[in-house]
Length: 386
Image 1 (spheres, rainbow, N blue to C red):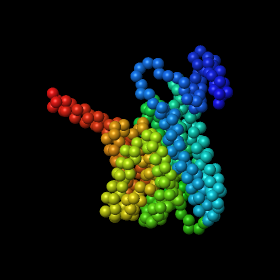
Image 2: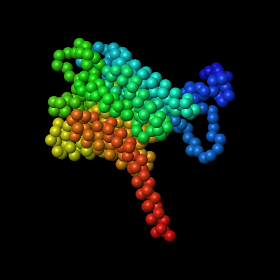
Image 3: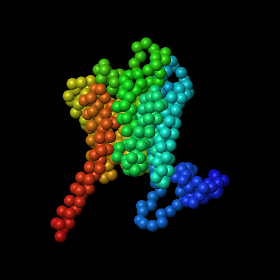
Image 4: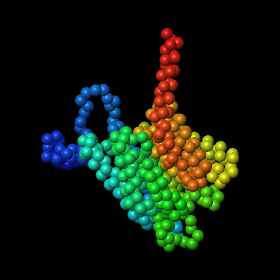
């Protein structure tokens, strides 16, 4: 590592102002900071000094996503061989899933990082590490059989329209990964909904056993009224069809524990999303007039992308609320709206995406009212004291 550090220091002057490659300074700094901790210090002004810079924060989230990614790779193979009536060992399942998931990851990262580098060069800014997380999130919320060109288009849309037009990392209004999914859902609905997209090879009919259906639990409840297609324990562990990283609530909760322990993710938002979703589902259980209303409240929390959205999407520090009280309100409303959309819209039983994007829009307003309320309370307390 010392030799690499010396080599970087040797060529660094060529990329600084006045150097031969000064126009590539942003690109050079991105690779340098990826390999080594920056050795620059603040020159003036008051700053909060903390060991958790953006690179460490983003790396922590990526680590928290690894359990969901690894399980998603295995589950992609498991669901494929289950559909074809085969019973292979562990590693063939992993191998099949890897060959399906890895290209999606590569397209996501290459597309997003290329656009980020281009915009950084044009603006003369540093390349931020924000896409390290977005590039992982986008594949995990997509079906395993999604065409790669769609991953490219959706990623480009998310980075350009969702981030760069607002000024880049830290300036976006909506979660970019959810924007990518929303774009695909509305632009190419046939590839984002239905019973054949969640299992590798099912849409092409590659040796699928007779009578096999790739419907998710929510899809089955809508189309056939079958609310018991998958047990609670299978749904919790993740042995069900679904998006690559959203099936295993257990793997997601392991990631949640990492985020909460490191202080990167807000436990207030996570908790309030689950509470809001549970109470809303409990209310629908009391009515019970449709199959989706009859799904037990606790089972709702482990179906679809609810848990993944609560842990990794709703807690995005840029698009979420900042105040502590605001986090409770924001998360609670996401949970309520997710179940409400899921139950009331049979054409789109997965509502967490729209719920989070909607609350992203209202997050600044929630914080505004919380801050104004605090100001009025303090002014009232000050006038009483005087």
